[in-house]
Length: 279
Image 1 (cartoon, rainbow, N blue to C red):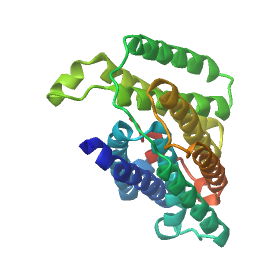
Image 2 (tube, helix red, strand yellow):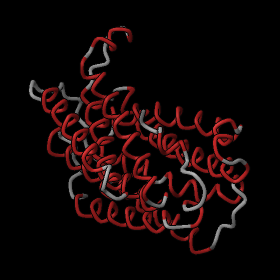
Image 3 (cartoon, rainbow, N blue to C red):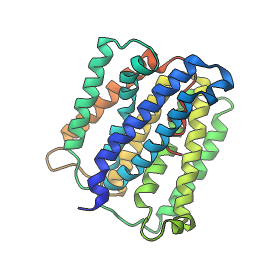
């Protein structure tokens, strides 16, 4: 078993904790500063640092776990934000929200238990042209959608873009010196998807509430990246665990949607840790 596999699940958990903590810190900054002053608030900057740590951790997780597992665990960042809101943002944690957090955690335990092999496969010859085509199409559709579209299609497009990040990271060869990575077209494709997803998500937040837009983003990643990983990259569940894993994914997604509708994720500017989490 490679080092990437051994570290994958802990890094996915670190990623969820980092994104959730970053969002809570952003909420604190939004409550204590206004306008551009938020960008200089210490809590805001600390949130960005948490986001950077979470992004690095998620890259490790994507290399060693099925993408549906990684995305499901990262979705739990919503639960982390809810748990930290009383401490960081000064809001009150309701008993009902605490119950839904427990549902998310329980469902993710089942998802992780059902995780099967995640083979490390080289990118097929068609992968890079297909990824570049998808990047171009998402860019064009996003540009056409923004003038008249609402928050929902923009959030969906952002989720699809971040799914491209996950798929490209999974097949990106990392052997040899790190500087050599800068010369690989696939590495730049990862960056292109990340920038596009960040912009589309930010635009979606101009049109709609933070909570629903965020959960649409996460669930789109969970579905698109998870299904693509199973169809294209050989991600599998353990024998006999397909139905329990699918049921747990549905439960985790539904509970996360409920948490995203909580007041902790509705007020103030969007958390930058969500905007920038996969740059």
